[in-house]
Image (cartoon, rainbow over all chains, first blue to last red; front, top):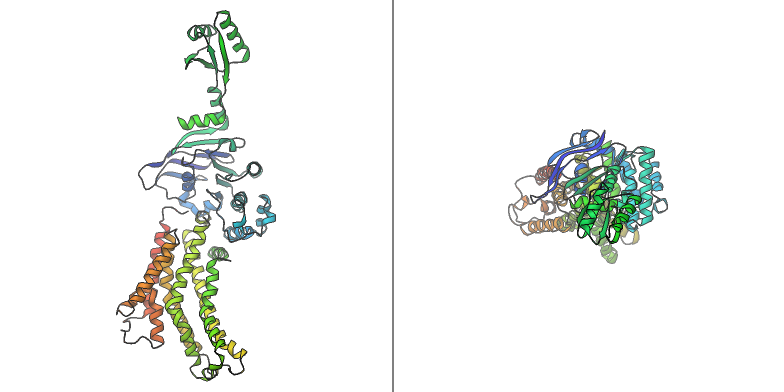
Length: 301
Length: 260
């Protein structure tokens, strides 16, 4: 079952240009879904539409299998969210900020201390929120999102402003919430390396279009497809013929021979044959695309 | 029950806010000035405290600046400050992702502002009483006022002034919900109030909701002069304005394209 599903979701702001075009997002229940894209790609607009913060114009939004608009209040009761920058009352303390939500969600008072403990803000519970660092504000926002034990967490760039240690802590916290409590998490980011270590599914969005959606494993298989070996020789056309004798396809590109990724033994054998045929080999290199490269390739398509 | 929880939640937000302080300062401002003047000139007030119309005079003296100036301006500022709590802290989006009906959010916040207005009235009345009795407690030559407090007429006047304030509150709430910039509701409120004061002598001035309390005070204190008495009950007009403006405000709020 999908916790979130959008069908041909399209949105336009005052100008006529679509900021989202036919987005078909599918967040499977119980997974961690990484929603990736550069700044201005349409991530926040999508999440705001899913949460009802923007009026839907075209397409369908299903949350927990039901149209969001049909049962807005009951649906929101099961969602915790953090959209863009932290939403906290600066003139109030951390504990008062949580009390405001505790009243609305009618959850036990003890839950306030629990979530403060969870995000390591217990010692600063009585400090006014405007005195918090950006990282502390992010952590308080996460505590607010978790207060009512939601079954779906929607987090828009939650690690913004956090130091590497803070990012690691949030990552571990989200993994724990997903594994131990089965919470479905939709997390957006513009940095793949921030989320690649713990997401299960990935959606890549750019210029309002969903360019890739699938498992991390599928994205990694793209990596293998996009890895290759490069030879630089003194006679490329003769070298290509010799490589053909090995049953391999290759092409010349910018004064180099490019072929699919091979194991070291085969590379050595080809090199030996080229030298035996009086071809000088200047350089042999393996080009293995990392996830970041694939991400950039996808958004550049 | 759900509305009560939302109301409590909204009430918590105003803790230590400028709006909360404004209610206290606004409620005690005029009585404090009167009290200071009485303490400074204590020797002159012995006869006044023994007069039969002591409370009426004090009441009119206290309400003069309140009805015409402090009450409308206080409402303009307080409503702007309450909605700014959400804008300034970037919390509209958080509020709109909580499991509350939009009507609950709209009316819970609105009711908080109404309660704050009632609070200001209570503090103002306490202030009026204290400005009378503190000099009597401090100075031997000033007796406790011998005239009985006209509770009924004061209560009735309070209710009238409260009702007079409702359309100001509703219109300021409408504008504040539509504009993020604090200066828009404040500026609009000041302009409407100032225009109303400027056209006070005009026979249709009562149509401006921002000067109902001024007209009410002038009529009640016998200072309306040769101006034409409004042809209809001002409180009834205020209630009509209040209902219409609140309805429009709610429709605009619910249909806002972006909620955070």
